[in-house]
Amino acid sequence: MPLHYVYLIVAVFFETVGTTALQASQQFTRLGPTLVVIIAYGAAFFFLGLTLKYMPVGIVYAMWSGLGIVLIALIGFAVFGQRLDFAALLGMAMIIGGIVVIHLFSKSAHQ
Image 1 (cartoon, rainbow, N blue to C red):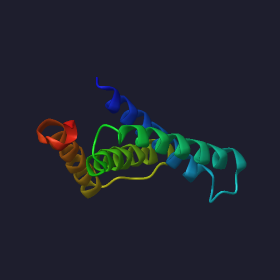
Image 2 (image 1 turned 120 degrees about the horizontal axis):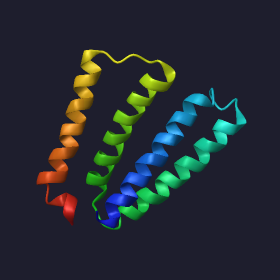
Image 3 (image 1 turned 90 degrees about the vertical axis):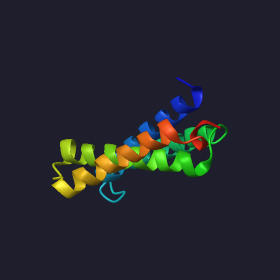
Image 4 (image 1 turned 90 degrees about the horizontal axis):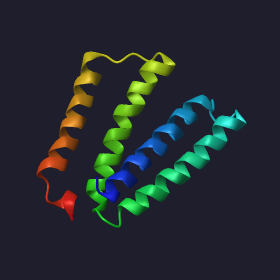
């Protein structure tokens, strides 16, 4: 796997951790989760920046935000008991489909 995809996956991981901690921070009233938000978002943007050395910002952001949306929705379901209806699941499937299309067919993604 190319190094820039590793950077992107790590960036998505930290963004997902940060957003999960954001929910757990209860609007920044709990210190531990608030510190996790700050550290995780810092790491996410650091690795996102490394990815941008190899790929254009539009492609990187589409993949980063799309994967983050799907992962956060799944964590919201599994951890916080938030329900996903058919429209939400269909939309997330379309997001994943878009990421697959970018990865498989876009020459921009492989610059």
